[in-house]
Amino acid sequence: MARDELAGLIERAARAAQARGLLPDVALPDFTVEPPSRPEHGDYATNLALRLARAARMAPKAIAATLVESLPSNDMVAHAEVAGAGFVNLTLNPQWVARRIGEIAASRGTYGNNAQGAGRRVQVEFVSANPTERLHAASGRAASLGDALGNLLRASGWTVELEYYVNDAGSRLAAFGQSILARYLAALGHEGPETDVPTEGYHGAYIATYAAALAAEHRDRYASMPREQAVAMLARTGSDHMVDLHRADMDGLGVNFNTWFREQGLHDRGEVTAAIEMLRQGGHVADRDGATWFQSAALGDDRDNVLVRSNGTPGYMTSDIAYHRDKFVTRGFDRVIDIWGSDHQGHVGRMKVAMQAIGVDPDRLTIILHQLVVLRRGGEVVKLSKRTGNIIALADVIEEVGRDACRFFFLARSADSQMDFDLDLAKREAAENPVYYVQYSHARTSSILLMATDRGIAPSTSADAAPYGHPAEVALVRALIQYPEIVADAAANLEPHRLTFAAQELASLFNGFYRDCRVLPSDRVAVDVGTVRSRLLLVAATRAVLAHLLGLIGVSAPDRMDRLDADGE
Image (tube, rainbow, N blue to C red; front, side, top):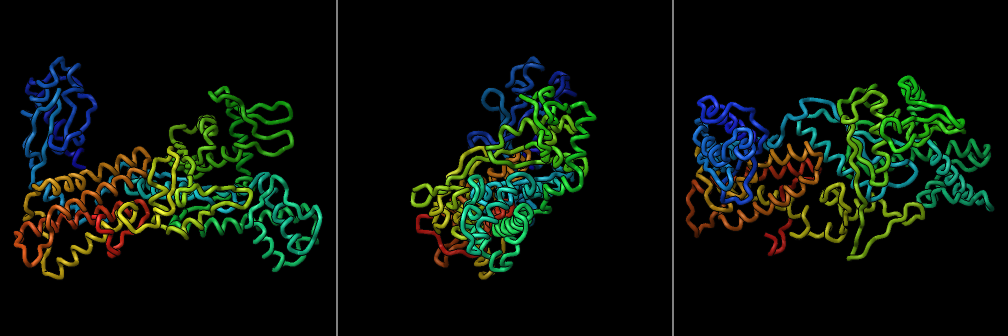
């Protein structure tokens, strides 16, 4: 990353100045190297002088002047100057810039990657809906967020595993089985209370559809067995059916999980009991009122939490503790990231406390909460109702707007912001549709390069590229050079939504460059061949970065698309 290379030069300048007695021999503070607020001030600026002033007992401007004077010989910086209250502004060497643009163009698919993860293992768990209903739009947001985060971490040197936690144990499965049985009996022609879906059951049309299929295939098989047995069997076969639908939805969104982890397996393998025993051995369990309690209040939680109820059933968080024990202790992940809906906010602190109780550093667990998704069509809200059958299934959204638009739109805002998803905009083939605009920009780069090849014109090499001096060229070059920093920061902060912003900004800069700087001349216009070839190199570099960006988001990077509206350039 350019900023890291520059930070190294600035640090060497400070050390050299200290060695010469121009600066006092004090510890250097943390400092930043980043683009200045005004582009005319150069490519990067550092605040080291301001940060060092107190310890050095010197004026920031004097320190900045010393840093400029002490900057080691290099081929990266063309100009360094003191600015403002003590910043050092840095302008990159045009030859270094041309070489970097050449490297970008030659490294399609890898430019932007970094090694901050150092091969450590991270698990990202997301969606994880109960296998009792169809996935809805919020699940699409979680899926797009989780998969893009996995791509981002993988590009940042982590060994990533994506996991879907199937919540196939607990009271909701019994209600699910009862709902299927009622619809199944109705499909067989039964009448009376036995065909009534429980109030707290599942009333969606998908239940009736599935039950009718069971009745057609198995006739009275489940009707002839004891009710309790039928409910249990239908809950299990029904949950398997729903998991298959969830898999299909994830395939439709282009999300591939390494593992589909079953909650019931924790119980079957005795891991829930083992987790409770581990807590008991640590002195964190109390038995009172006929129940077993996790004494989480003593560790900073707002209250104790039940592990086993007086009726012998596990408490709400018991399986979650066992599941995370499996992640950290059994499977040995260095880091775990859970993506939950915002309605789980109250559970975050409790899970952190539970990690402390089982001997896991709570900082190794990160929980991201995502807000709701509001679907709109024609400016009107498309209302959701998960239990009454009016649910807008994720599969329907994917079918209506397509995978690419789904992923881009679901990722277009930070996880902690509520999202309005405009279905009409997502389908529009025009510049105001951001995913279409970015994809079209990539297709435009491919088209330009193909036309150049047809004319026998090749992009310049980094050695013979002409300097980029037009303001539109400079702006585009800066964005390309700074791209790895965007990837690194987005990964470090677990904010993949930054990628959609970067994609739109880069597309806008490229189309501004295409508008203001003639790349391929017409036969009637004479343009210097060296300039043409240099601009083609810049086009190739832009194509590489747009492809990398879209790949991280999980959106295709087409080489051909229909033209935008006339005002879409």
